Each structure stands twice: as structure tokens, then as C-alpha cells.
Image (cartoon, rainbow, N blue to C red):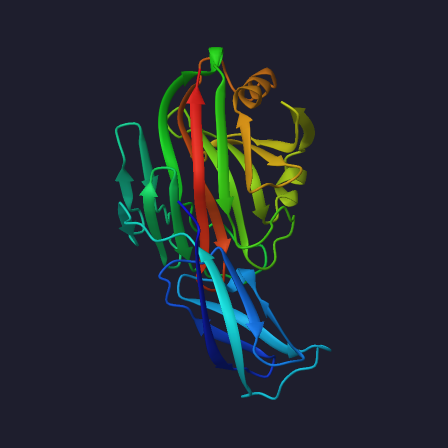
Length: 307
């Protein structure tokens, strides 16, 4: 959609850090917020991680970096860029809410963990949606609570995998690609299921989460496939738990493209997949471990072309 611009003026009282939360009334998350203080010798900084559908957080300081007294009222001018809101096709806060866009693809809220906190998904199309997710935890190596996703149903034999050309584009709470289990923890990832959900392949495209523990536990290795470097490890099936293969990109990215065929062929050659295995679902979404506050994750585009 076409970017729109909107400017206004206002006044805000700062707290002891110089911060204030300002309501904007656009009804949609701005793509950019630029604030100019109304007085000389002042500076303003907007925290991009604290821009929401209804508010933004701005910090006012003197030009030399010193703080204003708490309660000081600052005049300002603000300019927004945003995309006008469109009507959603589906909105749900149900734990396992699901919407079929056609017989081959659906979108899932997928709050599968009993410990999951509230989450609302807003879908404009099967490949364009966002969630507001508020997941509890300690903020230190938390477990996955939800996986809102797009799920595409396929029927592909591992014995003769065609080219599966895909692309993704997301907006996440931070740059990601960090191998730590602290702070907001999440990954943006493919989740590929085989054999009636008995075998799983994940491909992390971006993240702020700790994967090294499992990589070391299962004797992971590094591999370059189709020009992309991955850390990869394999977890055999155990009891009722599915077998798993995890590919973690060496460099996280919020936008890119990939052919799934080289990853599947390599896994088969390793003996981790059998020629008789059937690929049944290709999913893309966000595994969310911990946010500590309502946090937005956007799927801006997702494409899959087989053959």
C-alpha cells in the first residue's frame, strides 16, 4: 500500500529519564516517527521498539545529554509515515484459533503451550498478518510459548524433491541474530513437518534466542547450502517426541529467499530423512518464548513456489 504522511504538534510531560509515552491515534503502527522539539537546545529520540498501533515513546534531553526535571512539559512537532489501515479478514485471540484461506493454506494463532500468555492475531491475507503477543517468563532462556504461523499443505516425496523456492519478509522487535537467551526471546522460522507430524525440520531465519545449548548437546555442525551458511543439528525421535532437524542461519535476516530442496536433499544424504518420508506441511511464523509486555511481530510477505 502507498505510504501516507501525517504531521502534528503537541505537549508532553517527561518522567525522570526524560521519557514520555504519547498517543498518536492513527489506528495503525507508524512505519516511522520523527519528533522535533519545540525549544532550542533540546533533542528528541524515538525508541523504534516502543512504537505501537496507539502510542510511541520519545525521550527528550538537553542537547548536551542532561535530563529535564521530571514533570517538565515539552512542546514538539511530530511527523509520521504509515500505511492506511485495511480491513482484516480474520482476527482471533483463541489459543488454537485457525482460519482457512483456501483448501491448501491456513493461518494459525497457535498458542500451543499451556503456559502461553495472551496473543491476538490479525490477518489480512494468508501471507500478511501480525500478532500482538505478551508472553510470560523469567527473561532468561525461556521455553517456546506460541508459534503463530502460515501453514501450507503439500504432498511431496523426499525421494524426489522438486525445487521449493520460497521467500519471507518480517518485522521483529529487534534486529535479531543474537545467540542469547536473555531479554525478549523469539525466532522467525520455517517449520516443516513430515509423516503426520512425526518428523520436523526448522529453519531459523532470524532470532533473539539461545540455540547453542541444543547445537552442542546434539553434536551440531556447520554447512553451506545454496550459498547460505548454517549451524545445523539433529535430534532423533524419542518416545512420542518427533525427530527434529534444525538449521540456524549464520547471519539472521528479516528478509530473504531460499530453496528448500538443498536442505532436504542434504538431510536425506545424512541419513536423517528417508526416501519414503512425505513432506506434508510448510509453515512460516514466529516462535515466541518471552516478551514481558505486549509485543508486535509482523509477517509482511511469504511466498512458496513448488516445481
